[in-house]
Image (spheres, helix red, strand yellow):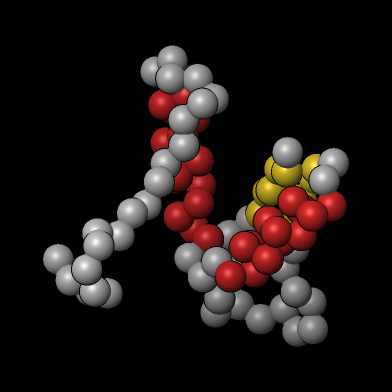
Length: 83
């Protein structure tokens, strides 16, 4: 299990040579490396918090439990930008 927490930092702000941090915790080194790689690829991190709120709402408030997860699917044959 790996837990990740990060603040949303504006891309317009400059911190000089300092890179904003995302904190990871877990007991599996390979899993932490995989999560770290995913975090580095995220361009719109501000959407993660609302997604987490949705998962918490479904799991705990509506009683679905921790056996659910959102999935994003692309229809077969679909192209980027098609509606």
